[in-house]
Length: 152
Image (cartoon, rainbow, N blue to C red; front, side):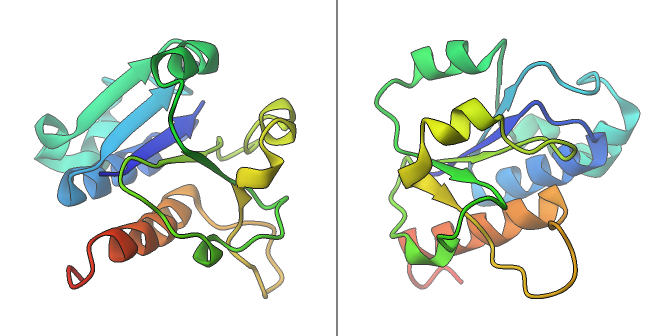
């Protein structure tokens, strides 16, 4: 289905919430190190509840190691620095949705190399960004809706 990729996530409850979303929708979750927490963190486990055994979890040592494993993947990079709304894309099975850390977003070198595939959630209020787990839920919801019509 869809791959959710978190690059260097920092906040355990966000990752736990995203893991729970992935378990509920049957999506793969990829975590790119370094992580800002241990996978045994109690806050991470608490946010994911008892759903962790159902998460298709993949942990990668680095972005380069991850990309070597998926050289042909179709990647979309979510960032506040894009002008292209996530709703303008026709998502496909197997797409990778890449999200940056809560504190710094995606690395500039990654965005520069992938400008044509950057997406954003338009913000109309006086905030800089949305919470990571909320962002993932919005974008994943749209992707799943497109790929599996009638599911929602």
